[in-house]
Image 1 (cartoon, rainbow, N blue to C red):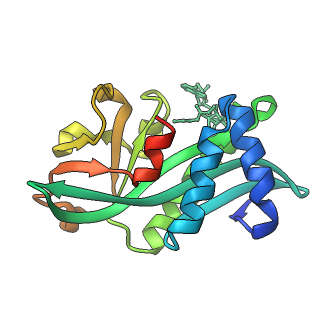
Image 2: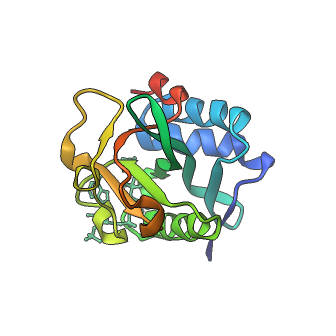
Image 3: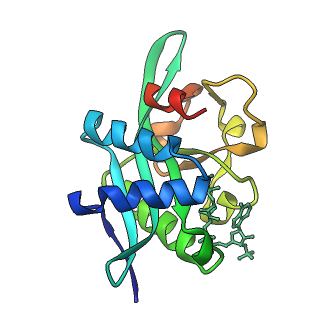
Length: 172
Ligand SMILES: CC(C)(COP(=O)(O)OP(=O)(O)OC[C@H]1O[C@@H](n2cnc3c(N)ncnc32)[C@H](O)[C@@H]1OP(=O)(O)O)[C@@H](O)C(=O)NCCC(=O)NCCS
């Protein structure tokens, strides 16, 4: 049976390994290590099957700024990974849904993601540009930058640059 649960300290090495297997490089796992240290507010969940880690999802703080001023804080989803041999079996979806529930529970107003445009809309993500949000990075394809609004009231009139933590600059 697969369960999605909060990451524990004993999972750190397996989480790095799963990220490396899924992306074919160490950068994403390294960013997770940095953010785990730097961000007490980060949320890290794993998909666990009999103590084997099959997938991982991570959320870290994102700031929306306009004219240099912080307008609102939300969260960014990244990375999301499932080990290659177990992809397309619903594990990624379990992680995303559990992550969204966790974001709702902590009254997070929005979640952004930079990812596959065919994948995230099924969970309610829409184009960030439709909400007046732009990425901090140049050259990001518009259709890959998405937002899930969890608190419409908090998001009313919010627009600007939505920035992941600077630790991500090491992975782009
Ligand atoms: C993307 C990823 C996390 C999805 O996890 P998963 O467990 O394979 O996904 P699920 O089984 O929940 O969902 C499968 C669906 O996702 C779609 N999907 C899976 N990987 C996809 C990809 N790379 N691009 C677009 N769609 C993808 C499939 O088309 C499938 O759709 P269907 O059900 O209509 O056939 C996983 O493929 C992965 O780890 N990829 C490598 C790392 C990565 O790209 N991470 C995401 C960064 S945004």
